Length: 199
Image 1 (tube, rainbow, N blue to C red):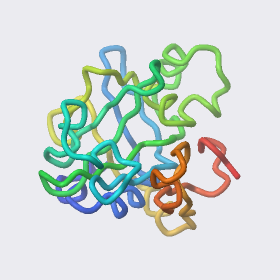
Image 2 (cartoon, rainbow, N blue to C red):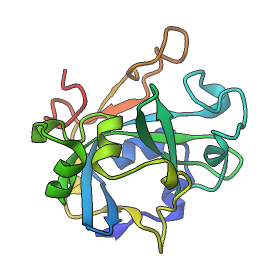
Image 3 (cartoon, rainbow, N blue to C red):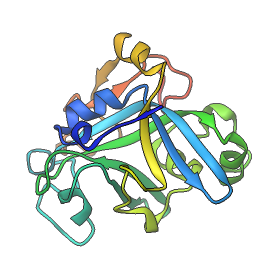
Image 4 (cartoon, one colour):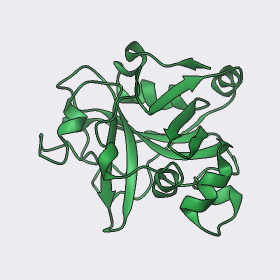
């Protein structure tokens, strides 16, 4: 596998979110490696995007999104779930790609322990499920995806086939009306069994 470089992440979130499809997201845990192939992402674009946490500027919660690209922005939602995003664009520009769903490719037994008794198809089908399966929590906010960290994203021999195949672009999921719910900034492999929504 070839790890993605800082130059990959320095682009706008729309470009990064689309090109993450087919890549492999890896977390090296003490108990072993877990990895998913990304099949669904969403782009969030700061001040130009009312759906973004950074729409109204930097806060303690969103500081990571305004920092260097190639890091994880991890946030808590609905009072119970963690979600993971990839920070994009140059420092000071608030853009990120939400990791919405992935197909397990390594460490599935570890993921099952994290997720409990669920069907394999839904182990990482959804941003909160993906974060839980990958062992991601509060302490991982700001973690690097570049050299030397416990996380990385890589291209492998299958990534190119995903990029050449159809990638559907739709509106994002779960946003309130008027909060960017009409922007077609979600990317997904059509009909993939491990996507959060297959339709």
